[in-house]
Length: 94
Image 1 (cartoon, one colour):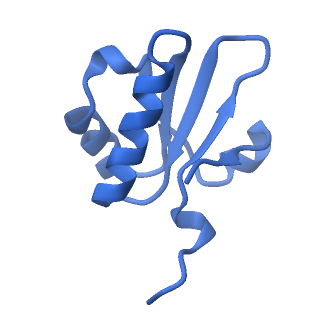
Image 2 (image 1 turned 180 degrees about the horizontal axis):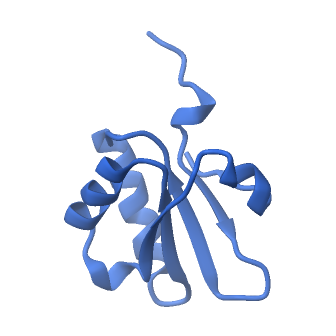
């Protein structure tokens, strides 16, 4: 069994002084377990928080748009991989 790389982990953070939660999904594919985990995060936070997905691959942006109901999140942003470290600390979500 292959060890999971840190770059494959879903990351999240609460944006300071806002009710926004940022969820970063790396790569261009999503496993069933990642999908179900993100769906649970969305369900837990949909009433209290604005959810913003960040992705670094256009394929993942399309996959998120097609996979999750738009009423669960505010928007999807494409960011460069280095931007994660510049914006602040993201926590490992899964």
